[in-house]
Length: 178
Image (cartoon, rainbow, N blue to C red; front, side, top):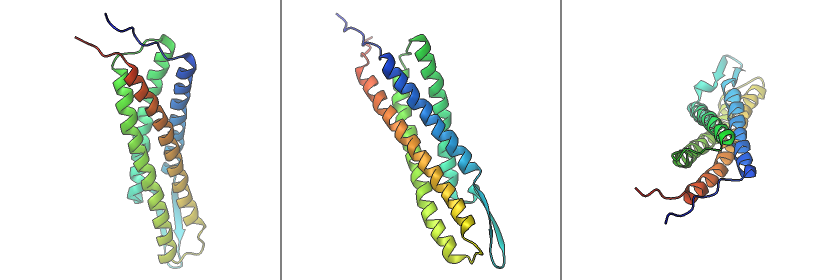
């Protein structure tokens, strides 16, 4: 005799999962916008330097992590809305959610850590090495870096919570015997 199929998640749980997916996507959209518009011109006593996020490797990585995470979040958002509307769950969605949430959350965490680290180190370095008329542009550039890294961290936390739910869903799924 086969074990009974697991009961589908309650409407409240599905709503929470949908809201977490929306929250993750929103954090990532804001991160992409913030980091991609991060440009500043530093006016020194003898020279002028124009900095863009592309000039800093860790910011490039942060942007890539946010873009990959956003792509995954949008795909998952569509799949979650589809499941919510139809009530039908594809058997492979458990594995996709489990592995996808784990991998993408780690990518977001490393992107956030890279952003925090480089913002701290480069801000101190620029202020120490370059004679500037004002430190406001440097503060503004690296503050946007800190804000982007913070939002990426919030997206990671949202996705980590979703990862816990996907782990539970995978463990409760019945084993298919051929």
